[in-house]
Length: 152
Image (cartoon, rainbow, N blue to C red):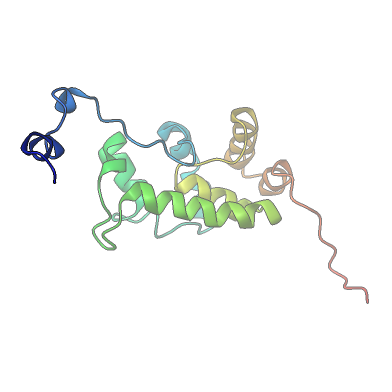
């Protein structure tokens, strides 16, 4: 049999329970700076990449509108937190990007505030895209060369 004192304390929270700071879980994929991501938008438009993410209800515009608060809000269409949608998107597309790094996949990841490259290489790709040199930008991503002829 449980004594009365034990029963009362089972549901009692510690006295400092409400004083503990609440920490947000870290994102699975680091967030790039908004100003850097904005500079990739003309290339995204030119290549028709991530039209949904760039739409008024998409992640990119919500990120611009809410700033850091976007991670705590939910997507009204799907009812899923933006942080979860972003992590799932980046996880799916990084698997494809590792197999075959294309410029379109890179820009799609940038539309979701993630870059798989270092800051220096991201800057090089950005400068190539601003100069509209898409071949140079693709070569900077380090894509595997694929031959067009299929040998049997």
